[in-house]
Length: 145
Image (cartoon, rainbow, N blue to C red; front, side):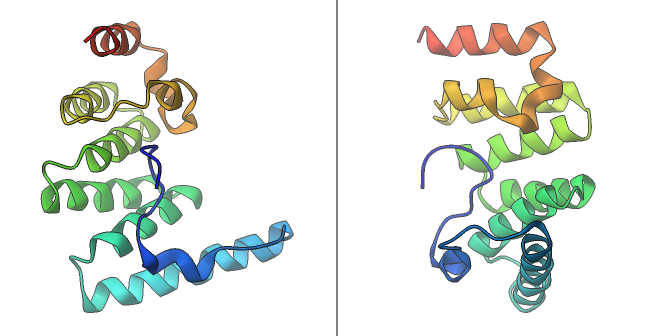
């Protein structure tokens, strides 16, 4: 997995790789299937990090930002030294238009080693936070280290 955000890790999602393009209705039903699938896994094993990552990503894709935020908070609780977990939580806060916690968590992700500055500049989940001048200042601060 790249260091970019929201992409789940591990074998848990390998069964869902689509080898050819699908129509919008097929994608929608696939997303709904995955939401149900990961929810059932998490009911049995609520601390399964790879399932949490995949489920959080799917919730975000579905536009269920508050639910995705809860999942990302859980991931940070389970993996407090995980830069990607902090990055994804920052993205979730940006999606619900909470700039201060998003910037605080981006800083923590950078401190923990998240260094994909190009992705941060393009990630649609961070669109709201990128409007804040502190975002540019934060990136400059860590790019110069």
